[in-house]
Image 1 (cartoon, rainbow, N blue to C red):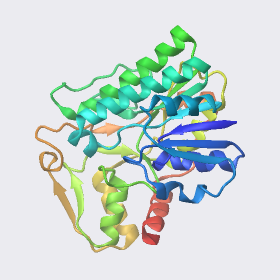
Image 2 (cartoon, rainbow, N blue to C red):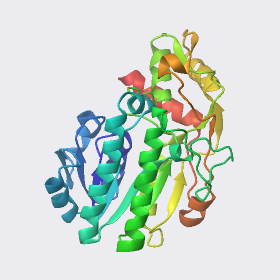
Image 3 (cartoon, rainbow, N blue to C red):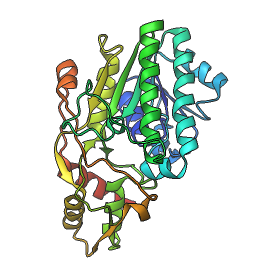
Image 4 (cartoon, one colour):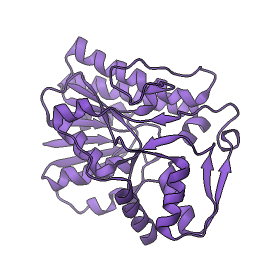
Length: 320
């Protein structure tokens, strides 16, 4: 098989490329390096079956050629991170909507299966925990820029499923829940790399809001395995799947755990949302996936729990 990965120089994309190559697949990466990094794929350049092009997914000529040459398409290219979403809402909306549109259009011409990565953000302010794929979605108001990402990714989902229903394009949608691990940048607000870097340098560990908000963190290796299994399965077309981990921790307790595991002298500092992002910023208090569907379809089971994940991230950041 030859896989095209849009956004393949990013955190998840580079791990996916590495794992596909390890099982003998060929991989082509398309990335404009706006949030990805050549460093993430530097070790792959010497491997047979790997190629990359630095360009934008919106370059339809380049995209069409790469889709033609691939058997399957993993569409990971997107605006990522709360900080980027708040600071650049136009870029967020245009990247997500236009990027997905051109990928689906190109894939539909040659009937190449597409896996679209979506996000747990689409559940918005939903209060029913854990979040199930068929639950109603409750998005905040349009004057709160924080929700533009959720809405853009939700429209991506609608478009992908419409392509399946109307044009029979094989497509599967995956909602990712706080995927973490080595190579993840903290540039755009990702909490674990930021906490670890602050702790290792004995700088204040900055907790946004009260710290009582709870998250469940999935290891990138487990997530990549699920993406590949969902792509390989023949009966996943037109379906939406949650992928992540169900074990919750508060952000405050996460900071304390990172401090303890690194032996850091850092103090914990609480930063109001209004200072961290923008006035009137709204957050999700809990974000936990119901994994029953993905378990049933591909026997998915996370193999890494939080302490294991933190050990890997701490080791990676120390080496850097």
